[in-house]
View (cartoon, rainbow, N blue to C red):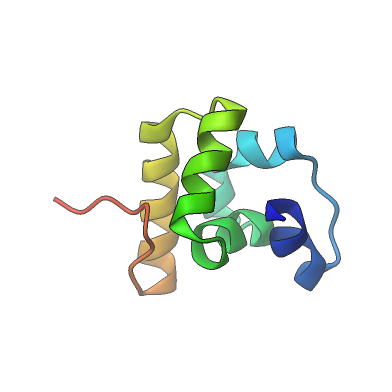
Length: 83
């Protein structure tokens, strides 16, 4: 379900492992990677948490990337961290 949500609208293919790696890589936000942004903006927070846990994604790193995307998009994303 996650992969369909993040790839279908953009016509790209990405594996679960590739997506997991992108979720914790700030370079994803720097190039505004569409599947990564879709994960943070279109996948429910509950499903985001389950995917992150299952794939062993570093939660703190994912929060940093979500915050970068949130800043770029101009609106709050569920995993974005604000101080």
